[in-house]
Length: 483
Ligand code: ADP
Image (cartoon, rainbow, N blue to C red):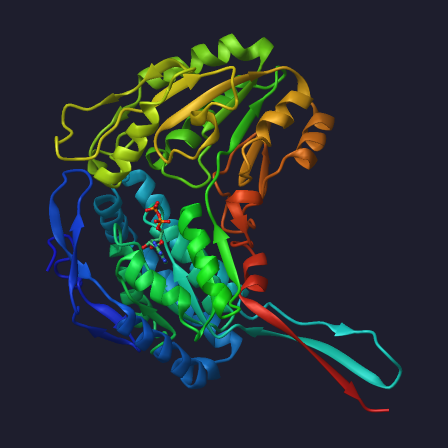
């Protein structure tokens, strides 16, 4: 058993039909802060995934499918309270497993509880409609679950992404098969333990850790899965959508971005500064909705560069439990990817760099955050999602150019406008290609209540808020002729 889950659970077990099973094979758990192996998780394959999908279907045909919406909601509310009670333990697991600073891991644990609260409360508030039709008819719509839903989760925000996706799916009465990322499974397993404790009927939630190529691919091509939600890279998103297409299974894809913050000359730079910075370095830049591009109107350009540079020189990267500004990256592979981008920084001016703490073990995956400037928005570092602590500042002149640069990557997840001019705020909000636009703030994905998702290469479908409940259900129209 792993030292970090000792006294709580064995992380090498997986959950099917309410029963914890011994792993058929295992994968190591690595602590990104030290590079040390700290335990093992199950390496489930096609057989376990197939059993999990069958168990979910049995739950739908049995106890889980028979609950009222209010009973489902109450279960999620009990789960929310259990998460709150164990929030500190969950945060510790996430900090060790993902390498994220403890303060950020605590925020994720609170968000997980809040998702269960929001969706627990919403479960019995979703209704169909009655529709006008021909004389002598009564027509109404029913909102029904898809059935078995598959949830393929990344390693950067396991608790938040499980919360938004599994929370909404359960609220609507689906039965879930959850495939957490092989790099960070521990809070998914802890969440499932708490769900069982909260009285979630067997099979309503099944958890099958494993690799993407084995468990993930098996889940995305299983014909018993009637909806798939995926958050991760565009490459894997494409594979999942292809696999789902064979079974005509709908998919929700959230695939990251290159989200801009646009600072106009009339902006309150004092107010903007903390958001410009934190949206780039949060979770060491390994955030789908990270703001990796800072667009600044010429009159403010020099001042904004100077202030951002000064802020960067003060940033510290350190082991997760030291709770510094940044923790390590998730893996040696991720560090290699980020360093690969940094080695291609021709055409960019390196404005400033933070530092890695002397306390950081050599085998951890540390990287100092970097701030660049360029006048070329087409530069590769200003175009591609790096998924590391790297921000690029780009100057612009006027709204037209701001819109062209902001919309010029093919991605469209989040954007923000910093300006004191109300008419400009409204114009810009309409013209930006993004699933979320913030005015004089930046929410990195926003709150639990706010629909979230992308346009273009950032994906399709919306999670979070009430909108997710529509995505995790389908509409049936009933037309009765009674004369
Ligand atoms: P990253 O590249 O940032 O590690 P990925 O998009 O590869 O993120 O992984 C996100 C999730 O997708 C993980 O749970 C991973 O196991 C899963 N995954 C990876 N490859 C596949 C695949 N071919 N089919 C299904 N799921 C996959």
